Length: 169
Image 1 (cartoon, rainbow, N blue to C red):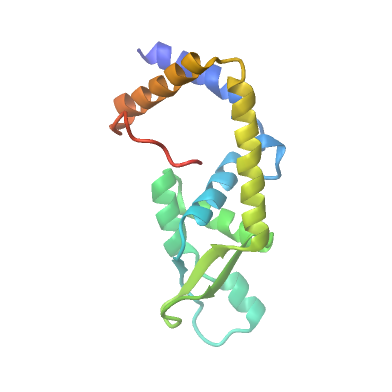
Image 2 (cartoon, rainbow, N blue to C red):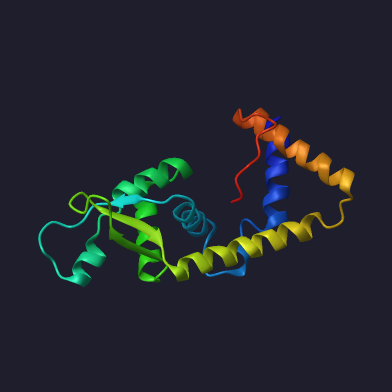
């Protein structure tokens, strides 16, 4: 079983280019793209504000992303410090912003900027095109069979009901 799984992993990661330096020939690694997706999927990530009355730039670059990073890191099974670095990179690139949350004294909300939403949409469109190309030669019956097999694998390895549909990622 281990050998079969490793063989499939090598086949599939090569097939979809998972080991490429960037995802779908974009400027983002797979992990950065996934964090971008998580920010787009979740609204209301809270980041702590720095103490005191620092200036705008100081506040912008000293925001503590740890609360949001911990949440995303747990979901993606990554180190929070790594996710924090990615969040800072996304903020510096203008893909993510912070704004006052419902309780401005307790923190700020992280969200994608318009530019971040466009980057995410472009990544998703490119990934969709790649998957359409990958399955283009399947007839309807084969496509349905593949869909059923993938649902079965998720069920067997992850405990998800075979009938449960995945959220597009």
